[in-house]
Length: 105
Image 1 (cartoon, rainbow, N blue to C red):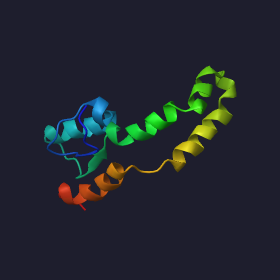
Image 2 (cartoon, one colour):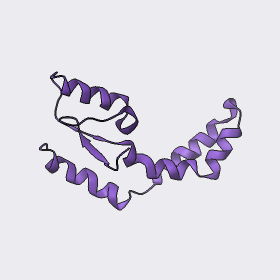
Image 3 (cartoon, helix red, strand yellow):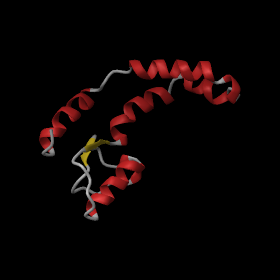
Image 4 (tube, rainbow, N blue to C red):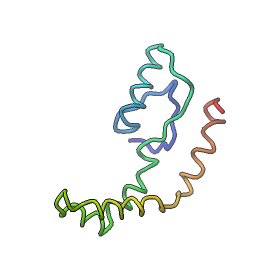
């Protein structure tokens, strides 16, 4: 996977692993000449710092050993933690630069 955090929906080729299924489908549609509105996608690399933080936590480890019917409180704790994670400097810069870089906005 490359290190791009934001990619255009037009004029680019990206894998599902890089951008997710919906964005990959939109990119393929654009390349096939189908009408796709201008836009950008936040790549999986954009979200990687947050995923790494959450999955390396003790709470994540606790979730993996709890029975499914007892996971709601731990899931809620992870959700609260995720909502407080700060943007990295690269994340802060990427979306702001994207509209001008890709001719939208």
